[in-house]
Amino acid sequence: MRIALVTGSAGLIGSEAVAFFADKFDLVVGIDNNMRQYFFGTDASTEWNQNRLQDSYKNYVHRPADIREVSQLEPIFREFGTDIKLIVHTAAQPSHDWAAREPFTDFTVNANGTLNMLEMTRQHCSDAVFIFTSTNKVYGDNPNFLPLIETETRWEIDESHPYFKDGIDEFMSIDHTKHSLFGASKVAADILVQEYGRYFGMKTGVFRGGCLTGPNHSGAQLHGFLSYLMKCAITGTQYTVFGYKGKQVRDNIHSWDLVNMFWHFYQNPRVGEVYNAGGGRHANCSMLEAIALCEEISGNKMNYTYSETNRIGDHIWYISNLNKFKEHYPDWTWQYDLKQTMTQIHDSMVARLRQLA
Image 1 (spheres, rainbow, N blue to C red):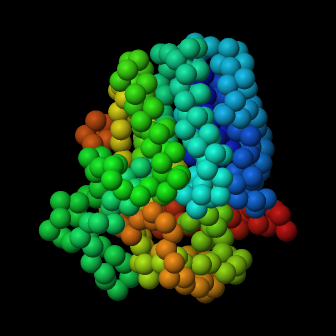
Image 2: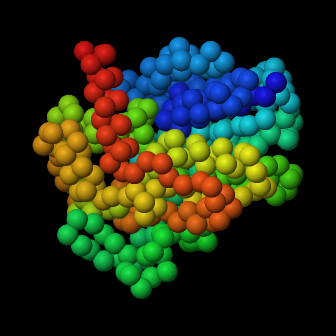
C-alpha cells in the first residue's frame, strides 16, 4: 500500500494536498486538530473543510492529533509504518502578529512540531519523501533593504538590481535581520528539515512560500490576506491596511500550483533541498492593487481604513524567484494567474456564505 500523510490537512495547502494526492495514493491520512480556530477565532475554523474532505474522498482518513505531542503522533506512524511514502507537513501557527501573543505556543507548534514529525519519519518510514511548507519570513526584513522605488500603486525594486527580473532567490541571507517570532520559529523548522536531509540522508524538501492562497482558505484578519480581503469585499466588513501606504507587494501562488510543485519533487526527490515558492512575476500585487481587483470581481466598493503602523517584520516588496525549482523540474509551471485565483476565492466564498445564511 502507498500512503500519503498530510499534516494541517483541513487547512489551505493541506486540503489541496489531500485532494491532489487522493487519486495518486491508496490512502491519504490527514492530521489536523483545528488549531486555526484557536489562533484566529470561530470564523477561521477549518471544520467545514475537514467535513468536505471526508465526504469527498473515500480513501481519506482523518486523525485529530496534536503535532506537539509525540504520544499522539507515534500511534499513527506505528499504524501505517513503511507504507507511508510521502509526508506533506503543512501544520503551523502562520501569523507573525499572533506569535508575539503566545511565543511558547508558536514555537512548539512550528519548531517542536516539525522536529516531532521529522523524528517520527526517521524512526518509522525513513525512505518517505518529507515536504515542508516554510515561508519567505525566514529572510526576515532583509528584503526591505533592497533599493525600492515608490510608484503610483506599488513599491518596486530598481530595474538595475539583479532581483528585478525574476525576484528574490534562495541565496538571500536569513541572518542579521528581524524575523518576527513567527519567522524565527519557522527558521528553526526550516533548518531542521534541511539538516535531517543532509545529516541523515533523508529525502527532505523545504518550500519557502510567498503568499499561499486559493478557494479553500479560511482567511482571517491576521492570516490569509487575499481570502480575508475578498471576504471583506463581499460582506462589507471594514478592512485595515497596515503601513507602507498600502503599496507593499506580495507574490501569490494558488494552492494547486504549490501542491503540484510537491508532486514534481516527490517523483524525483532530492536531499535537504530548499526552494522559494510563490507567484513570482507571474502573479503578484500590492495591497492597493488587490483591493482594486476585489472590487472589480465582487462588484462592491470596499470599506477599508489605513493605519500608518506597519506590522513588525513585514515585507515592503517580496517576489519569489522560482528559477531554481524550474531548472530542477522543467515540466512544472503555474496554472493560475492572480485574477483566476481571486475569482475562484470569490465564487467559493459566496457559495460558502450562502450555505451559512
